[in-house]
Length: 398
Ligand code: ADP
Image 1: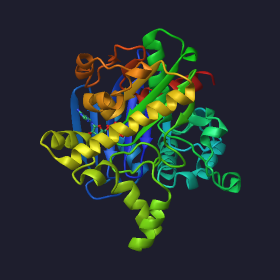
Image 2: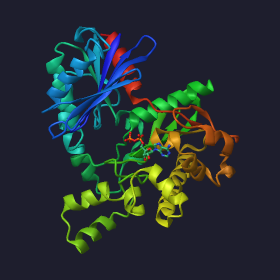
Image 3: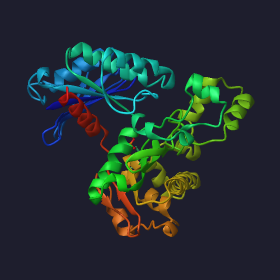
Image 4: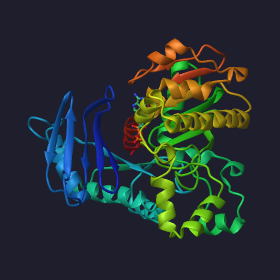
């Protein structure tokens, strides 16, 4: 079975075609700058990358170009679009409606549309991708895999905000959590690498990428996660502030006479590692600057690791113990420094990093980096594989 996985953003579409026999990626790529000057497709098959600069007006044009190169006589991975058995779509917000992946029907599309107020930037783009794929691949079964779904097992005492209850009842203001596909994948992968059933484990997963979140996974189910109503809550990130006294945005707004969208921009785009360091939102740049003695870069790194550490403690408490701690995504997979600092001083709870193993675990490597009671692991995330697996499973049962 061959599955096309699509991750549609407002101006980009990432794609992969997987052959589910052996779970092999046949080709992958990204269409960037949709509807903007300089739009292009970057397509990769094996080691060969191709860049095609072409005017791409909308998502429909993007999918058409993707299909053109997937079936290209030289660069393609399939002979014709008919070879694609099904399409899996990443969808950011499924609200309270979706606690798992689903076959896309007109009703599901309507429900994704109803979730737009919860994810005004992401869901419209995800929908545009779904509608374009339906137009270009008519009749193909399609599946939606939601970022929020894995966290729908959180109990109310974990997802409610202490706000007037009507805000939840009438406006669905509560914590949802994101990166669910990644937290689900790495927690299951950890259990399988350890040869233990996930039902028996207390796992904390730390997805540390440009966006970052942590999750408490008890018996295979998410019971708490750091992101909330939006991906702004929790850890602090490349350009997002993370947890904050809610009085701060109000003070900024009043004192600087900013409009709500300007405050939103400040908290989402000008804060985080970029805001603190004044240098960059990229962890590599900060590590380099800190090594050269830049004080604010060092502060940014220390704040970052401290926040991760605080949530390790919080989630171990929430679950009544800890068996496994998993680091994943760009920073989690590649920064021994952040992993070491995040775990520093946690020997009292059985977390002890093996410095040598930690240093070696980079660039796609997978394994254990601890020598204490708690297994600390690095596991490269693979959201596309989860989307493809869910799609194959749902489509097979039709
Ligand atoms: P996204 O959320 O966009 O998918 P990624 O998971 O690719 O992001 O993570 C991007 C982050 O990973 C950036 O902050 C980048 O600096 C960091 N990163 C990538 N490689 C390294 C490395 N070798 N050392 C430290 N940080 C790294």
